[in-house]
Length: 404
Image (cartoon, rainbow, N blue to C red):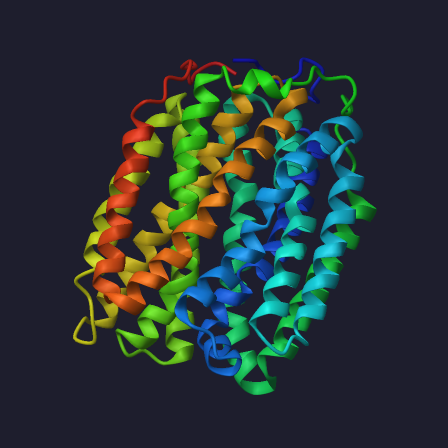
């Protein structure tokens, strides 16, 4: 396991925190787009005549298309630096989502969402490599956790803003507005961001073939595959489930989705800080799994008679777990390879993990259509049990939490 580059700027440097702020801000605008289909789910089902599995595919497409793009993007970032690759990709994403708002049916919207997510693929490996190069290991979990809060903040803004906006002016105009905000984020990042002094070419890269011999990378990728699938199911169906099964209004279901995002924000930052202090990532990853198991099982018992306070608590805990794990996995991946290969390792990991979104999210919807939501939640419970068991197999090199 390799330490970050020796020529990293001093710990706590102004450039490091400026870079982190820009990367996090850009991630917020990207995630606002990525989670728009979940926030608009009930309206999309009604206006486009979608089935539940189709909604799962639509929501997965704007995320899951990244499985096609993250590995090539990671290779490009390691060769050419993150700034130009990320800007081009995110601008393309915003343009394609803007066009998708005019789509008349599932096929065209799905296709444009899928292409847009390929454009956004560079943001995760690019951001991970940049932060790994700017920050020392004893602060890396917290720094990547802060960056990952951009994902949750984007979802939170989308869940609170888009449903009432869509009811007022239509979901198509709401989606176009989100695309313009993402474009503004890309321009701001492109103008202000500066890559770390080490640059991309001065760092030792990670040959792709060596990842298959890296046990930490393999275990983290298996864990990510399971929990990325759970993440996709939660984002795709929580608001729809609460509207259809628990009887909440569209706006109230959107508020619960926002609380779900708050849980994810707290989880991504909190788990990162906790793992920094422990000097290891795996114990926190297992704790995430235990909370996910209990929460998914509890959701299988809810319905119209469930008090809204209970639904709020469960939505928050679901966010802490199936949304909160990602920063831990990304940090573990970045620590398992040389910094110069962090984008490639992260891209390869996400290419595998995002495949689960195309499998688990539609399957959750299929079970809901044919067997009911109770069976869907129980199946998701069993799925996260598998991920938790994989987390128990991770054998990382512990770091003394008192040392950098």
